[in-house]
Length: 235
Image (tube, rainbow, N blue to C red; front, side, top):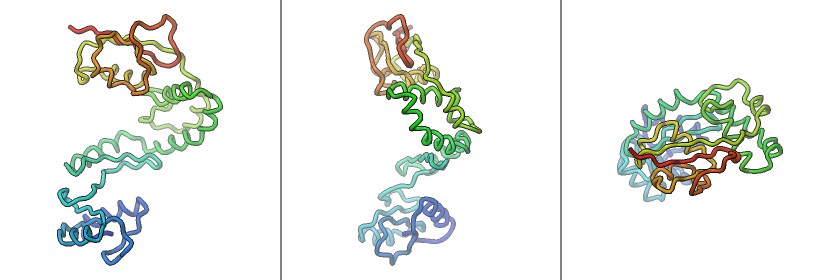
């Protein structure tokens, strides 16, 4: 249900139609959601009394739900919400992400979907398959999602399981904001952590939740995937 006229209502109508909604007026009994685009508090109260969830444009105090700013790379959809705190901030972030995400990102998603059966056959082990896909999609990888790819299917067909890799990472501060970009990226990619017992929990929390954690030094031979040896080296 869409109440109101003018630019704000037109913008909401475009958003709703893109999402596949059927837009009706206030006399429609079957509507479940309502957007009040003209700030009419009385209309909002009437609709809430009917049991509808209501969004009132630019009135977060009257909203039962908010609408995120959206970056659409079908089938990839990125939604940015602030819980009604600042629509302007959500819009600014959307504009930045629009510039970062290639227009062909949806084509990459489709290629990955089409290759699922082939990848399962090539990498029967779940961890090996995850590592192979992670290596493909890593920054600078053959299918880095922030780079435009003419033929992602060809890159998938050429992919091999990444060799085992061990990285020593020195941690000098308990403040996660002090991590270098490289260290933060490695923590997000690592399959396992060999941890000096003094490395703070605040740093370990930046790693993947499913990454294996081992207290002590790593083995000499790298295990499959990416292993990090985290060493506490405060100044």
